Image 1 (cartoon, rainbow, N blue to C red):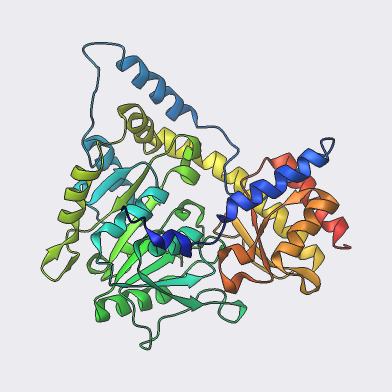
Image 2: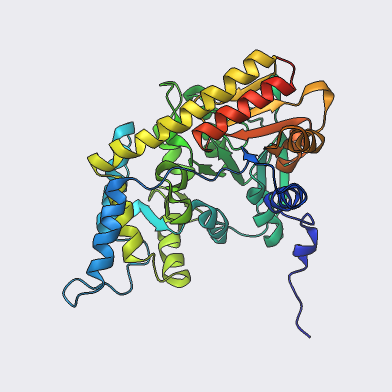
Length: 395
């Protein structure tokens, strides 16, 4: 008799965002006359930039001709796109070789697939609150997951301790959900810890483009020694609006080795086994992101989201609500008023002012009593949601 993966029974009954969708849909069905202001799920609202659209159209036309048609693409990515991404890192004074860049269908996919490089007996450290996938993907693999709590006392940016014994460490900076970001000094402590203990950091850099503070690194590879202990995973979803287009990349340094095994070589072999590559059309569009025109155009959309964050932060400042994030991040993490729990606050906002956010409990035990808002919404909807929040909170 077939034995299923029994670790599925260890997952929560419903994925966080599915619960949000269900509760919101139920409210909308009961109140069809109401408009709902969705400030929760981090899906973008601005369209793809002109340079990307033009490149996508050109790629589609290429597929219609014998001379320019492309079939299977290289498993690790088109050479020109890998080179463009490696050159992008020069903006941060980081040297990344093109063959250290691996193109994928998105950061979410790579965060799960990359675990195939590691033995199931490895212990995983997740800093909470955390994006749910970090925990769920490791539960499905049967790994031991330990949690490092964070809170207001450390700005949701905890530091390592030698009492921690972990082999795989997840760090997301700027963080989802808290919006908090490690500066170079604090991030160096994690790099030093990983190198001392032979651990590997899985660094989620999905929101690096929102960083403005020069003290905050855009890449973990800005920290000396990171090339021997870190893998960086990034996405064009928020950078360039690719949530519906899907493309990301992972940087695995050739200097990263454990027990005589080279992780760059291992990941290249993994890609040969697990994928036939990302489509030519999508990679052609992605390459346009890293052109001078593309980089300038996507910044215009990023500025819209940053203005949305400013509008929301102003509302919370006026209301006397504690929060972090918003600066250097598209997410604002606030303390629920009047001692409410996150789900209680969710229902209160939905029913009273038709505003949707994300309860902090969905990101782990440390999220209890907190709430996440996203700045990716429509600007006019964001302004209206901010006005409603101010009125509801009595300011």
